Image 1 (cartoon, helix red, strand yellow):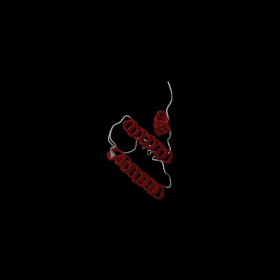
Image 2: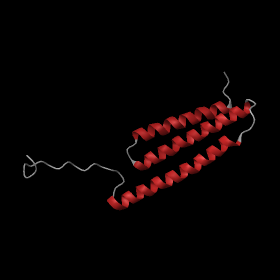
Image 3: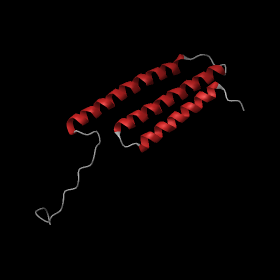
Image 4: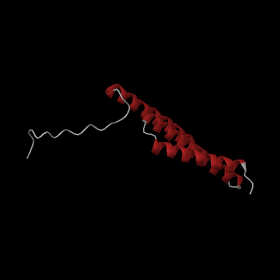
Length: 115
């Protein structure tokens, strides 16, 4: 079996998707999650590009629609990343931290309340 450049790009795209998914699930820090989401998106865009190229190499007529979808998806990912970073900066400005920690439960000291 020979490894063509298209297959290599496909495997690289799949590896980027896996790496991004791993980072998205494992990393607790929001900025690292945003970065992992972008790595995963880059891998998906690469896989979509490879699928389009393989279709063109197989003799199918050139179709600009998949390329337009990829360009649109890249712009949407950029806007989503900017929105996520803006929300994270606003959270830092309001709370002084970028993680959402749950509030500690109220202590039950036996005073007041329903019995």
